[in-house]
Image (cartoon, rainbow, N blue to C red; front, side, top):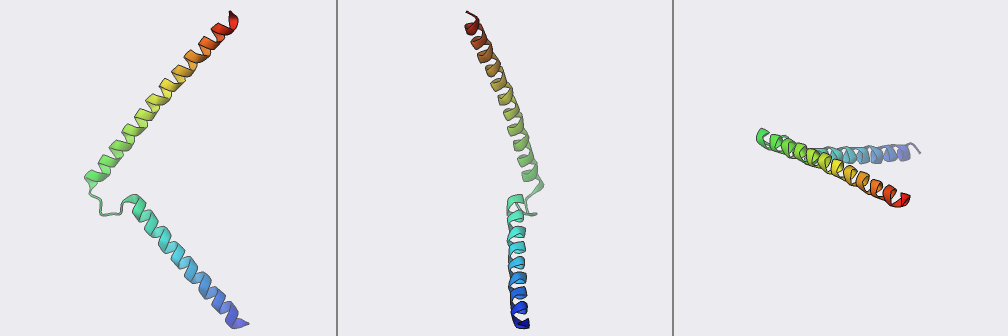
Length: 79
Protein backbone atom coordinates (compact mmCIF):
# COMPACT_ATOMS: atom_id res chain seq x y z
CA UNK A 1 0.00 0.00 0.00
CA UNK A 2 2.93 2.32 0.73
CA UNK A 3 4.29 1.79 -2.75
CA UNK A 4 0.96 2.83 -4.25
CA UNK A 5 1.06 6.18 -2.40
CA UNK A 6 4.66 6.72 -3.50
CA UNK A 7 3.71 5.97 -7.11
CA UNK A 8 0.70 8.31 -7.00
CA UNK A 9 2.78 11.05 -5.37
CA UNK A 10 5.51 10.66 -8.00
CA UNK A 11 2.95 10.87 -10.84
CA UNK A 12 1.37 13.98 -9.28
CA UNK A 13 4.79 15.59 -8.83
CA UNK A 14 5.69 14.80 -12.43
CA UNK A 15 2.37 16.25 -13.63
CA UNK A 16 2.84 19.45 -11.63
CA UNK A 17 6.37 19.83 -12.96
CA UNK A 18 5.19 19.44 -16.56
CA UNK A 19 2.31 21.89 -15.98
CA UNK A 20 4.69 24.46 -14.45
CA UNK A 21 7.10 24.07 -17.36
CA UNK A 22 4.31 24.51 -19.92
CA UNK A 23 3.02 27.58 -18.08
CA UNK A 24 6.52 29.07 -17.93
CA UNK A 25 7.08 28.53 -21.66
CA UNK A 26 3.65 29.95 -22.48
CA UNK A 27 4.34 33.12 -20.49
CA UNK A 28 7.72 33.55 -22.19
CA UNK A 29 6.16 33.03 -25.58
CA UNK A 30 3.40 35.58 -24.94
CA UNK A 31 5.83 38.17 -23.57
CA UNK A 32 8.09 37.71 -26.55
CA UNK A 33 10.97 36.48 -24.43
CA UNK A 34 13.70 38.61 -22.96
CA UNK A 35 15.59 38.69 -26.27
CA UNK A 36 13.36 41.37 -27.81
CA UNK A 37 15.26 44.61 -28.40
CA UNK A 38 14.01 47.70 -26.55
CA UNK A 39 12.97 49.36 -29.82
CA UNK A 40 10.56 46.48 -30.53
CA UNK A 41 9.06 46.78 -27.07
CA UNK A 42 8.55 50.52 -27.51
CA UNK A 43 7.02 49.93 -30.96
CA UNK A 44 4.60 47.43 -29.46
CA UNK A 45 3.70 49.84 -26.66
CA UNK A 46 3.10 52.63 -29.18
CA UNK A 47 0.92 50.35 -31.31
CA UNK A 48 -1.14 49.32 -28.28
CA UNK A 49 -1.61 52.98 -27.30
CA UNK A 50 -2.76 53.83 -30.83
CA UNK A 51 -5.22 50.94 -30.78
CA UNK A 52 -6.56 52.10 -27.42
CA UNK A 53 -7.01 55.68 -28.64
CA UNK A 54 -8.70 54.47 -31.83
CA UNK A 55 -11.09 52.27 -29.87
CA UNK A 56 -11.86 55.15 -27.50
CA UNK A 57 -12.72 57.40 -30.46
CA UNK A 58 -14.86 54.66 -31.98
CA UNK A 59 -16.72 54.27 -28.68
CA UNK A 60 -17.44 58.00 -28.62
CA UNK A 61 -18.77 57.89 -32.20
CA UNK A 62 -21.02 54.92 -31.42
CA UNK A 63 -22.40 56.75 -28.38
CA UNK A 64 -23.08 59.81 -30.55
CA UNK A 65 -24.90 57.66 -33.11
CA UNK A 66 -26.95 56.02 -30.36
CA UNK A 67 -27.94 59.46 -29.08
CA UNK A 68 -28.96 60.60 -32.57
CA UNK A 69 -31.03 57.47 -33.15
CA UNK A 70 -32.76 57.72 -29.78
CA UNK A 71 -33.56 61.39 -30.38
CA UNK A 72 -34.98 60.52 -33.79
CA UNK A 73 -37.15 57.76 -32.29
CA UNK A 74 -38.45 60.12 -29.60
CA UNK A 75 -39.36 62.77 -32.19
CA UNK A 76 -41.14 60.21 -34.36
CA UNK A 77 -42.99 58.85 -31.35
CA UNK A 78 -44.40 62.29 -30.46
CA UNK A 79 -45.90 62.89 -33.90
